[in-house]
Image (cartoon, rainbow, N blue to C red; front, side):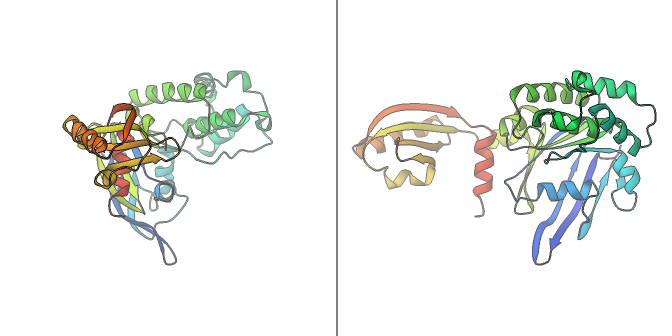
Length: 302
């Protein structure tokens, strides 16, 4: 069985700027895979190369075993991409938009699947509405429909829930989970790390055009075992001995977030604070999540 997506030593340069620096990984068929990184990490550049919207400077990418350059027609038929940007043709209705997209893939009689998409994306009552009249969230639903209209085995979601309401998120994830359960491979990029932690079985993290982490979500979170100690202090300065473990500090509210590797660290931290003459007004202990791991990995090597 071929991989759903294979990336081999992919690089992309714009003059002297290197957007991708030798990235390699695979996404297995049927996976729900997360691709995470800060803005400018190279995620969208990588997706653009896989989708045929940009050409790599070197390296190779395949979709369902089809080279995205040498066998681009088959590679593009196997892939559906929901882009970050909301783009649409203002001259067509929702149904006409999906029919036109079907035509790009040579699908002449696709109305049954279009009706199912409209129903599952809660667009049925907007099917005959002009695209110009839709809200931003509704337009994003149509983008999702366009990416799925040819039933691709591999679906890439590039920030699909950015700036949308809770209802759309719930509708989207119900449908995408169903598709994944039916065997579709899902690749998700998102800044909502709680979504990635809940949905993705494996996660790759990128920074400055390079892969810096790749593992199962469970192992990544377990690797960052520990938690955060959230303190609200009355007056004074935090002892220098604790400064290295501070994740966040709000000086106006005297709220301090300190990374701890285990419960055994809590009492020494509190003792150090008391010895410094500080008064603890409030205290809370939280467990490590994917966001903590992400922040820690992104800080490494700076």
